[in-house]
Length: 120
Image (cartoon, rainbow, N blue to C red):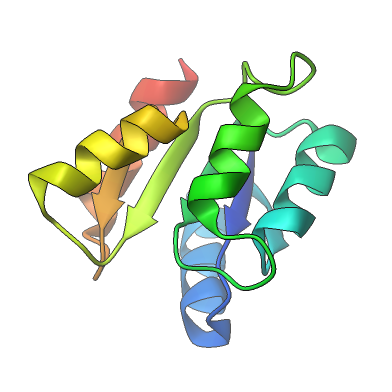
């Protein structure tokens, strides 16, 4: 069973997405901010991180940059979750160390395709 780390500060979004991913056979670990995400990347070793970019404590952009500089976790693919569908947002996510991104509201079938493509 593949393990996903879902980083989302909105309780409703986190709960809904977590339950849908679990129903698809994924083990889901959750975090509510970028700092907690980095800690869980070290302790849980997820196969993939779904990272909201607008987070408290440590935002997703900075968490991704920090992860990309840490040899112990920089191999874990990160998929950015953002409400901004602009081309510059994709570029910003890739520059921060993300492998791909999905826009909110989440198109779940598209998200699943992206997850499967990144963890194979």
